[in-house]
Length: 154
Image (cartoon, rainbow, N blue to C red; front, side, top):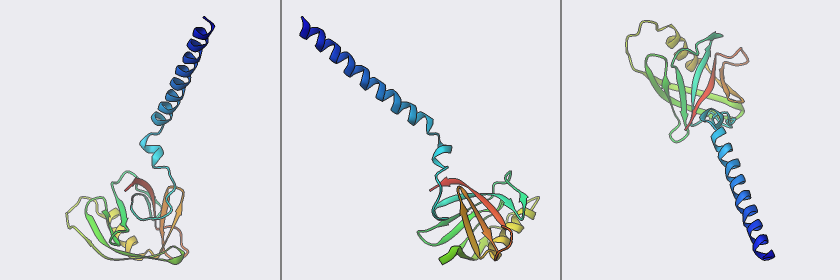
């Protein structure tokens, strides 16, 4: 009789502990929302969709402008808030960058001011910096020309 009671207790403990660890794992996976997975700090600007949030000190987070640097073919592409664009880029030591051969579609849009400034920034920028989930494009040691936030890791 003792062995049956001990066996029943052991099984009860075993089932209870398995169920507890399963609930713990389920809780952690439910807590990991897509936003949390995007808060990983990037170590490179490549293969990430960067949403433009500030341009020449002005908040433009309501626009749909973004940029992506593809490490596969060293192409840059994105959206200036109306037209799409692409070009090439080169990364050098010390956070230096050269963006060139920018070509864009030619849709007529009501407000082209943000897009025109964005294209100008891409031509002027000669360095970048990463801080957490933010990237800035800069010219020399001046204030950031453009600030981006991680939108999607590709």
